Image 1 (tube, rainbow, N blue to C red):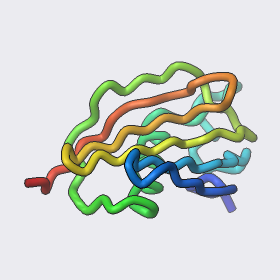
Image 2 (image 1 turned 60 degrees about the vertical axis):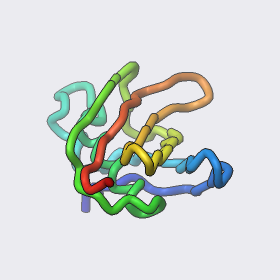
Image 3 (image 1 turned 135 degrees about the horizontal axis):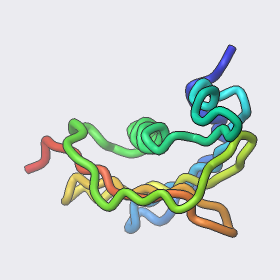
Length: 120
């Protein structure tokens, strides 16, 4: 059965001050989003990367607001099936802002900010 989420290999926390977490992910070939995107060259859609960043952030960070907007979204390289990447998440509570990036030691795949409502 095709999966909707990547396999989480490990979760590491930064310092209490920086609010960062690092999630090591394996993206298997049976992710439901690969077939048809695109025929002959399966790639992980950008909207899925944003969704995964928000979903995993809600699991590991104290985010309770509603998604309101995205900023500075950049897709620099293609994430292909059978990839291992690190999702870096930084929660900035005073701005209700989540910063994310998907990368390896060799390249950055994508990055951006997601703004949540419900703040003071």
